[in-house]
Length: 115
Length: 112
Image 1 (cartoon, chains in turn blue, orange):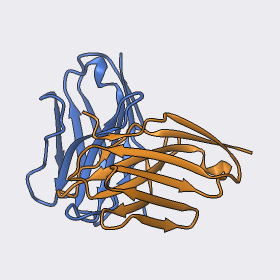
Image 2 (cartoon, chains in turn cyan, brown; image 1 turned 180 degrees about the vertical axis):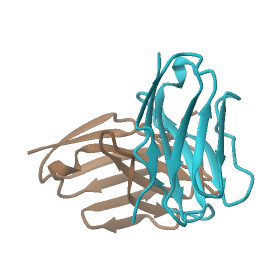
Image 3 (cartoon, chains in turn orange, cyan; image 1 turned 90 degrees about the vertical axis):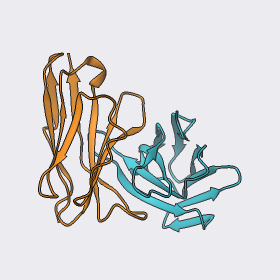
Image 4 (cartoon, chains in turn blue, orange; image 1 turned 30 degrees about the horizontal axis):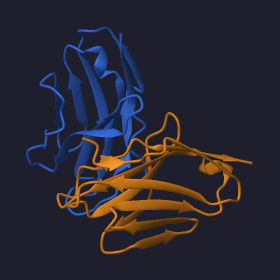
């Protein structure tokens, strides 16, 4: 079956603009995660959705970052008033469930460049 | 603070030899550990995992060893193949079981 898909694959924007990144998780997966990888760094957890529960936003770096998940499926990560330090690869992952230990399946990522 | 550390940014190994990738962690609440493999322009793919109740897990050419007292795990690849050349990330999770804490990765190059 289809894996996790993300769009766009690349996004170049100017400082101060807003961007939206999209994630389509694997069908049937109830848990969805956003991570980002800055240059030379590991993956940094941003936000987690599990079913209809309130998301865990503890990893979001500032209030310019927000995310939503509609209908328990597709998720959108929005970055307002982008800054150069937001440049990174944004990765989405999904898992069958969010409790217990589950393998997370990652999408290919969106490479965001803020000029 | 980096709770999962991969202190070797790169490793070069000859084809057929053993590759050993190391990972250290600081949070004693971590009870599940994973290795992911990442090729350029692709997302990380799951390789192998180990629960804290075990000290070894093997899957084909890949074996992960866990030393809880030292808060250290390692991934052994035997024999190494050129197709194993990729960045390997160590990750850990705790009781919450969801957010993964990742190391910075080790870039493995397997030369023919």
